[in-house]
Length: 473
Ligand code: ADP
Ligand code: ADP
Ligand code: MG
Image (cartoon, rainbow, N blue to C red; front, side, top):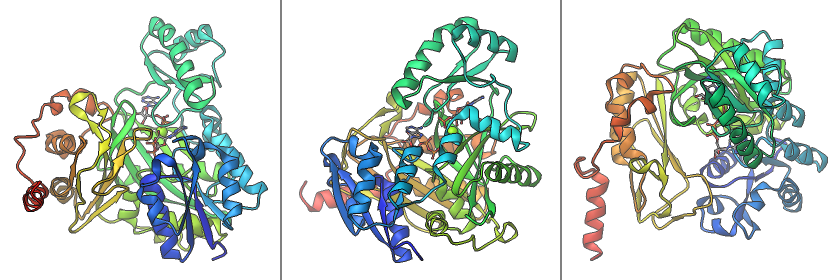
């Protein structure tokens, strides 16, 4: 292994995840943190940690700053994680200029696939279907209205450099287009520093299906099958499944091939995700490519047995993929629940604060990726996701049962979380029958009608009560 020391340019659970991969490979890991993150778990999991900024965000967002630190601490590579600078092509090019191996694709590929209209062109040129849409970016609101009428309403108005489910609005007629146009532009300018927007035909009630790919420097590219991320709220994923319980084997094979075609078409290297929408008639449309490790990479690991973060590091070190497509099999079903510190009953309002008690779930087929512990205070400056619960089982039915059990095992006290809401989703017959699309959450507001008190007392609650009694709290 030519990589000996990695700077992790991220925080929270993904920084912990990367540090774990480094440990297994015998590589040193260097963490960075803001003052607000001094008690964060990722600081303790790394071999070295350096405070990079007094304010909560600037240190994680300055490419020159993080690469300087990588050079100063004797690192030979840098892992960007997800969010923050992970899709910032400047970080990859600064790394290249300073002799640090960036763990991800080339700067040019990040730039071109990060531009959603350019990515659509790449997909078209690779023979992969895309949704009907505007030709390139929109000139102004009049252009938007003309093109929307050509495409036919409903359409999606999208920020060209958008991400994280932001900068997207559905428009059903000219009036809504005129209302949303300035809003999306101002959202995009604030969040992504770019005012460019484009249009796509809105696929009504689609399934979100994405394919994990791995590509090495030698030109080999494979897929690790698909994930179904249709359980979303406001275009943000809540529960992810692998493989999709809604696809046939033929569809699975077809979409895997499409994803590999996109990866080869853009000269991709390292791990990436190709996202598609699946409509009611069974047609797939390329949506975008994420040129980084994804939050939900865990479930592809669960069904294939491949450690994606270790694969990323090996690829960056120049090693060829150790397997070809025919050697990659999947087994069983996996689900990931994004445990957010939010109150679902109060519009999913973030619920930051101190974790007074925390018990992770365990038992067969259960994995928890988290960056918290009893006594940890979740800072209000970052994403509200505080843990990921990953469940694997041999069959879909067993996955449902095991997920209920694991969510019940998990105990997080002091903040509100999405756990009880997920229990509600798991009880719904349509979810159980693997029949859902991206409107599921919106179409079932009744699932928010639960009472936390009437739920059976979990083991974790009982233990918490016992400890509190012993400590005389
Ligand atoms: P995934 O596609 O891996 O499921 P998400 O879309 O949930 O990831 O995004 C993961 C994290 O990265 C979130 O915190 C999200 O807000 C952030 N993020 C994703 N894309 C961008 C972007 N282009 N700019 C800023 N933040 C982003
Ligand atoms: P981001 O970069 O923020 O992840 P995406 O382009 O991947 O944005 O879209 C996020 C989500 O928005 C999708 O998972 C899907 O639910 C919805 N969406 C995006 N484009 C369309 C479309 N053309 N039709 C219907 N839904 C869409
Ligand atoms: Mg997306």
